[in-house]
Image (cartoon, rainbow, N blue to C red; front, side, top):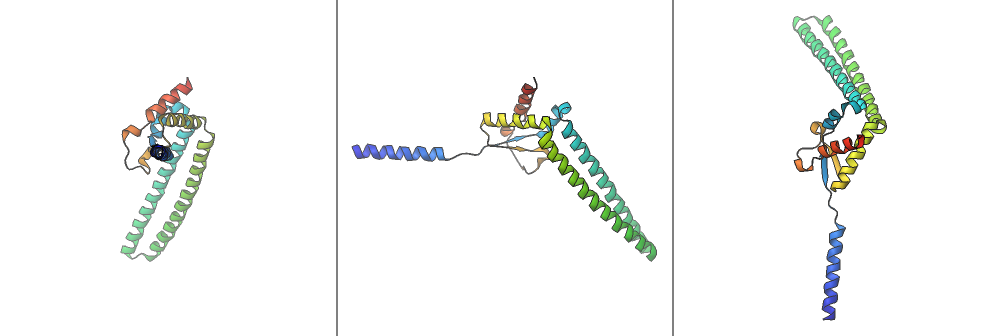
Amino acid sequence: MNKKSTLIIVIMLLLSLGIYAQQITRFAVIDTGLIFDTFRRDAKAARDYQEKKEKFENQKKLLEAEIVQLRQKKVNAEADGKDSEVKKYEEKIKSKITLLMEYVKASNDELNMLRKNLINDDIFYSSLYEAVRRVAESEGYTMVLSYEHNTGIIWYSPTVDITDKVIQELRKQSE
């Protein structure tokens, strides 16, 4: 009987250690775009970043459209047998492509710098981070993902969306 009870205690101890050794990773998602829209006046740096990003994207589209037009003119000149104009358009196209590539690189560098500043310096972003941390920890989540523009998230259950709870937490902080 003594060996049997010792064996049962050892088995129960081993089973309980196995249960406690496993940590289940729980994910949550937030819609940062909705949060920034909700607190628009507080999210100036985020809005500035978004506006700059849209401006860069529009300028990129204009440059791309100019290149398409130049290519069409080159094709027309080739069809008409105007070799001198073809060479002129080739040079213009090459110049515009170089300009576009430099513009995109410079724009991306500037946006990356703004994004880093936004993350590191913006008071609202710091408040958002703290609110997300508090909600995630209180709800037992070990990781929170942003699904703004559905980047990298194919599907999620609405039960893991903590956006509303983060908004409530931010409102409590601002009171």
